Length: 445
Image (cartoon, rainbow, N blue to C red; front, top):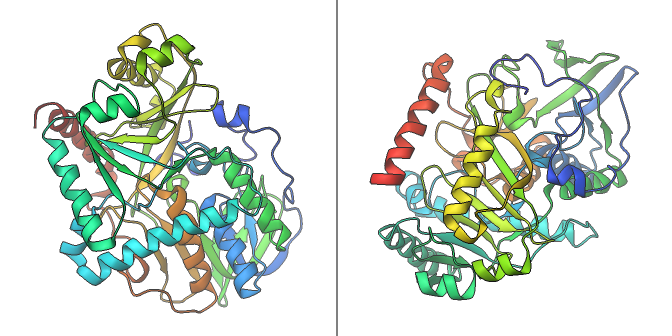
C-alpha cells in the first residue's frame, strides 16, 4: 500500500480500494480526464478530496474564481473515500476544555461556531441533491470504563453550559435498552446531531457541484515536479506543464514525503482500519438489541467506532498498521472483528465481507491548520486527526477565502502553520510508543 513516509507519490490512475463504499456507490461521475495540454491558471488545487473540492466549489460560487484541480488517481481515492462517514461537530483531537486552556474562552467559542458551520455547510450541499445514503441524526459517545462516564458527563455539562449544545447523559441500562446492548459500554452521552453517510458518494456529489460551477477536475494527473519561476508556480505532470499564480495543497494524509517545504515533516500519516460485516439476521439484531443507526465512538485512547449500515451490516473501525507495508496484514481486520465480538457476544459466528484502510493526517498539536505562506501564493489545509469529514469542507471554504484575499476568523488554526515534528525521521517510533501507551491506558489506567 502507498506509504507517504516511504514512497515519492501515490501512483497514477490507481483504482479505488476494494471497500464497501467502492462496491456500493455505483459508477463514478465523469470528470475532465487526464490533463494532456499545458495550461496557465489563476489557481491550481492539488488533490480531489473533500478539502480540494470544497475549496474549488467555494472559489467558483463565492469568489468567481474557476480553479483547476489535479488528482493523481481518482476523486476521493484517499481518505475522503475510505473513512467511516461520520458527520460530527468536531475537529482535531483537542477537547473544548483543552482549547480554552490553551487559547482562551473566545477562541473556544469561535472554534465551536466553526465546527457548527462545517456541519451546516455539509447539510446544505447534501440538500442540493447529493444522494449519499444519509442516516438518522444521533451520535453516541460511550464510556469504555465506568470511571470514564464521569469524564463524559463533565464534557457534556461544559458544552451544555457554554454553547447551549443539546447533550443527553445516558446510563449503561439506558444505552442497552434504547440503542444497543454493547457489553463494553458503561454509560455515555448522546448528541442529537451528527449522522452517518456514504463518504464516497458525498465526495462524488461535491465533484458534480464543482464541475457545474465551472471547475475543471483532472484525474490521473499526478504532480511530478514543482518549482517557482518569476513569481509563478510551475507544476509538471506526466503530460503537461501548469503555470499557476496560486497553488492549494489539499492532499492531507496522502501528502508524499518531500512534497513542499511548507508541509514536509509537519504531519504524521496514521492508518485507520475499517471492516464491514456480513448482514446481521433478524435474530442477531434482536440478540444485540441493535435498534439504532446512530454513529458510535468510545473513550479509549486508541478509539473504536461503529454504526449499523443499510442492509443491517456493522461498520467497525479503529487503528491499523503503522506502515503501508503492513496495511494488508489480515491481523488488523481480525483484531477489529474480535473486539466487535466482545461488544456483542451474540455475533460470535459473524465474519466480515469488506476490509480496508486509509491514511489520516495527525498534526503535532492535534489540530488542523489552514495556512498560506509568506509569499501569499501557496496554501494548505492538513492535520484533521481523523475528524475531517465535515470540517474539511469548512477548511476548504476558509482556504477559498484566503486565496481570494479575504479575512478569515482570527483563530490559531487559520493564522499559525503546522509545527514541524521534532526528530521527524523518528515519527513512527513515537507512534509505536504511543500505541503501546494507549494499550496500557485503555486497559489499566
